[in-house]
Length: 456
Image (cartoon, rainbow, N blue to C red; front, side, top):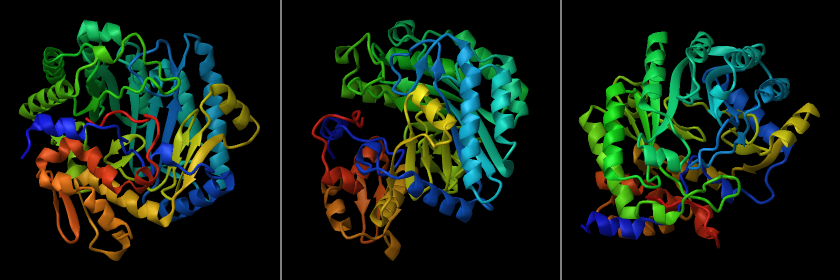
């Protein structure tokens, strides 16, 4: 087999992260009408609410400071007077959805993402969640989670959310090296992360997660070793060990203050990951899907073992629902049959909702072919294998897709049989490349400009 270095050189190309299929750049140009989104929403809700329940992703976009590694949609402000009007608007949007649905929603998942959800006061977060449940009920297997900044997440934040049913906390750490932190404008001492992690456990959270990133500017192998050693002292239940996505050409991401010469090369970046992975594995963590690790006591590990791991716009989840409603500026909803994204400015979002309109910017109605490809890509991302033994998993261009994997087969990365595809252990760094072979929308419409981060 080719050396790992040559494989990285060969397969390190721009590609999607596949939190959805089709990926957002390949949604139909005509998008989706509000009526079509509502129709698929109703269909999915009626098919799944009673047994499975639904998920809510609530986007809370405000941050006091700009972290220059971040590619999320956010609003930088130190004015906390924005909190209450925004929450009022989110609750109005939720009421619009509740008027559409045929019965009381059973909420299985809530995820508060950002931005910085803990920018909001505990009182306003309570107002938000109480308002959601005025017209909904909790699913028996509910799992609620929030993202917190270690510098501003107070014990009262955590206690308030815990009392509201949240049992999973997630803290953005990225890297503990001061030079790296200064470059990405995210300075937070280990003592702050230790304090919020220990507070989570004391209060009773059943799963604490830390986000780490490899490939950041000025990051070295020594940085990763130090970061993982500090992480092991705290022993979070889950770790998201993400590849930094350098996409400064996308408007609004704010990736500035450094350039590509400050970033590790592809080979150096992969070494950072392998170093971190080795240290985490030695400490009892198990690799889950792509770029995620969990202790064997965590529900995500059990979901992987039971082949129930799911992936959506929130990343990997141990709790699958067919329907996910996105609330807030730029949030994306998923009815399984279609996607819909909200407008990306707070002002436009607020104006549309206050006029009684769903604040949709764009969307995509999945074709029959899209749905089959989506299942294959989910299988590859979550289970590192897929099958077309059943007729419903076959599609006319399957053979052409498999031909694109011939070189990966020669490199002993994938095993292809008459009815199945399986990634070998050495193929895990290249899982996005395998998905790209099935991505018919990407194959048919190769972008003329760079729109994706590198796959490795």
